[in-house]
Length: 175
Image (cartoon, rainbow, N blue to C red):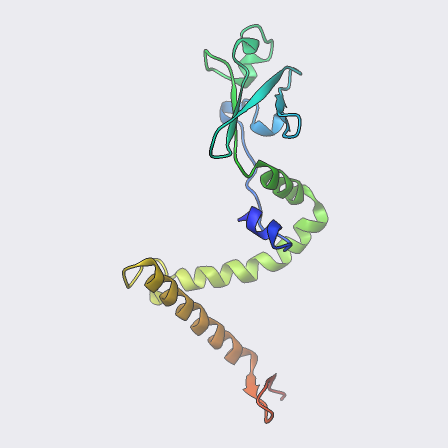
């Protein structure tokens, strides 16, 4: 999704979940990923090359480097050493995480998120049937959900007092 928004030159107001280390160990964010040089640097300043797969994902295996590492206990329990898995969208995810840490971006995100997510949650409630498809087939489900979204938008416009103007356009009603 972040890649599609980036290609469309749209600003992504999507919060990327931070990674937590399991059991208090180093998370992936503690490792420095250099996609251009195709290597990953661990907190102990050891590097491993990224091996890319056909699907665009990759893995950096530290292997034998971890055996004598003084930080091993805080990094991994794997006997073969730590592996860092990389998504095909790693660049976009890193940019999203950097945005999530920016206070200005976070303030704009918090200003818009409640309105949007509240409306989506309202659509997903049982009375609208958003959680379960009422028809079969992706095209029919897409049409059904689009109709649901249009109905919610029309109801919202009615609350705002949108009325038809004489010239065929729409305007807000004045009191």
